[in-house]
Length: 299
Image (cartoon, rainbow, N blue to C red; front, side, top):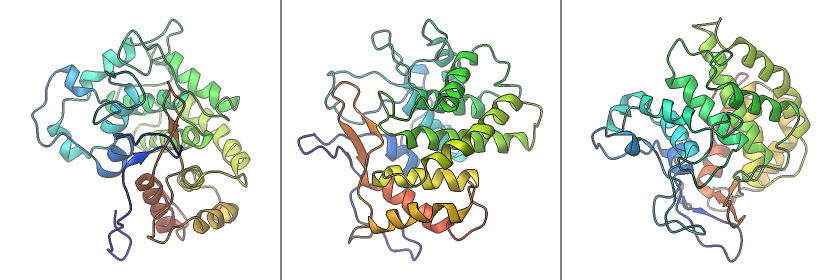
């Protein structure tokens, strides 16, 4: 991470829990998001190797073996630049297995294994984002029967404020709002070239996102939660003047090394330990400050 003047930030990029007795967990979540992490030039391989695992090392606070998951896999493929995709397995290999991995209600599940039947609104958003990017020009989220239940699940959670207290895997409501806003921004960009696709889901999200964002303003939050809230507002286009309280609170939290505390945005499902990343929070704050003086901010 570099500051605008080119000076490197030397804070920790490890992902850890703010709980005093929690072990440090090495996770791909923020590493993929921040560093476009790929697999060091290895040739593309079959489906199993096109799936990402949350842990980059031995699992912490859970079972000895841990399955690949749809969230980390989706975020990885969404983050890796186009020019580096040849270094990993073809993302299109994942589409059908991900769509087939659904529960009895037709909602796509978190883990690629039968012994962890989990769904999560935030993970569902990122899976829909993955399909939007790699599902091809003919994909229409309004009509694709494979994605209907997952799409409705996400929309209903937004409309009914169902993620105000987080989910099993994501601790704070800002996690959901942040990824929903990224999803909407990607739908909006896609509509520039193909305005007839995804119309209903795009318009429905737009109607309810503004209300949800405005309702979230002015409420206390941890450092990463505040940063995700402000960044979501920037991407969506919320008026800058409405973000003054959040900006003041965020700036006060900056530490002596120039970085920000980890905060937390997800948690271990088995133990409930909250997990955050100093690197993720600092990168988010840096992007916010970089764009804060601009009239129009985009993802």
